[in-house]
Amino acid sequence: MDSVVDIKKQSKHEVSLEHLEKDNREWVDDLTQLKNRKPVESMVQRCLDLHKQKGAYIAVVEYGQDSAAIVSTRRGYDEHSREVQNIKALLRSKQRTAVQKEFASSPEIIGDYLAFCRSYLDTGGQIDSAAESELNNDALRELDRVVKEALEIGANDIHIRVTPDDTHIQYRVEGRRIGKTNRERKTIEAMVGAALNTRSEDFNEIYNEYSVNSNTIDLNPITYINKKTGEEEQRTVRLRIQKTPNARGFRVTARIQDTGTAKQIPIDGLGLDEDVKALLKEAYHEPRGMILLSGPVGQGKTTTMTAYNEIPIQNNKRVISLEDPIEIIQPEIEQTPCVPGDPVKNFPNMIKVSMREDADILEVSEVRDLETAQATIRAALTGHLVISTTHANNGIGIVMRLIDLGVDARTLSQPGLLRHLTGQRLVPRLCDNCKTKVDKERYANRIPDDYQSDVVYRRNKGGCRECGFTGENGRSMIMEIIRLDKQSREFIANENFDDWQVYLKEQGFLSMADRAWKRVEKGEIDLFTAAERVPDMFKDDTASFSYANYRRSLENNSGGIQ
Image 1 (cartoon, rainbow, N blue to C red):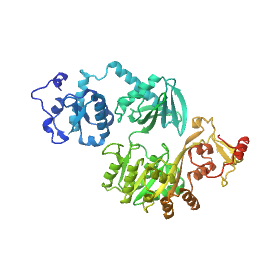
Image 2: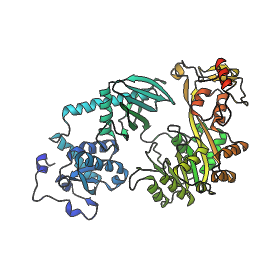
Image 3: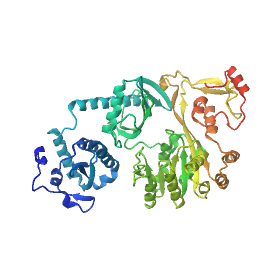
Image 4: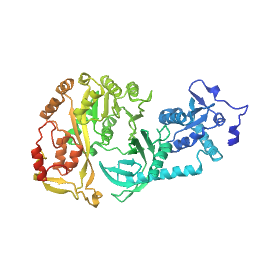
């Protein structure tokens, strides 16, 4: 292998890349053609890390003054397009270097060149000083410690708040924020900065605590002790990061997601009511139209879609799923990452592309803007079954959300478009070992008239060893589902949502609140915990409110916040 000195010389016999330029993806079939080009030093370690962690074959070489060329496998440009775009952005923002050309080559040639780059660093091309590298390593080790703490207690999210006076971390476990550990501000700043700059696949600017960033960070496998089971476990996770400035600092929300192929929860494992489960199964057998699932972030919408994908898989149907990000790897589903704002890989354009690919079912991870909404509607009206999610309060709220985005109500009322609408929430399940029993008369002004049990089960705030002293063990999924009929479409066309709600009740529709009360009756969930998550558990906001009765209920200790 050539030495570092050799590649710094300009030989008169140098094999040039220019003669290969017939298009932007000309083939490089000789390792010498690469080794006669210096690697872009700032990108070497990033390319080596991408190869080690993701199996990506990507190299960046100098290509004239203040410019560079990228070399990857032809498949790599598709499978690792986000990484390629990030490299371009980093070169542009940090080094004022433009990528002039993109070349393709074989994994063998690029692999040999990456080995050459590693040797190049070892013999004199160090990017960072040893001291700076050690600081980065310390910061990344701190990140691993924070994530390990989260995994030990079964957390789904990590909340970090940084101010000049106070820096603390909290974890969300089964919907409830717990723990509050303090850290030094410098430690957290270094941790977040180092993670974004070295482990993020989509961070493309110089770290700045006053900027707003949404990034993804992949972590090495973490071994930890599950505090509930006492068993040693190992998980490989990624963090979906949202960093936002505060008045005197910044906050970070990190969603913990498994990487690799996740174990798919079966439909029966969701814990849905039997009629809901059956209606949603029916929906997945529709030949065309739209199925829309709603709920806030973290309420299991993606899990529901993944579970119900067993239906088209069993029927040998082709499912194309457009996602940002891909949260759960499903081997039998054709998953495509989308990049909002990208000129090609944005949701509306990729929906158009997928419509030409003979899909039986098209899944879109979220409808969040008018352009995506219009594209999904076009797909549904041209013979595709489209399944997606959106952030709405409940099933009826989905229609209100689409109208708010700019979709015309008459469009939404077309026959055959909207098929089924759902709303769902995850509510912590009471620990069967320590839940407490209270006479229902104590909550007489809260419970509905058709409440069947004589008692109300409540959460034991002190908990027990079996539930990790939380009083809760797992979560219950509460879902409502609306099957659109002719009358419902007329209500949509006239935007008459109050009367639509009345009509649904007359037809026997059970809302999330109705279904949550059934779980309260069974002693499965706490009524006040459920009311914090499920809409309209206690009061219909269109009904009259008696302040006098409310004051009396407080005196009797039977109302108010518990």
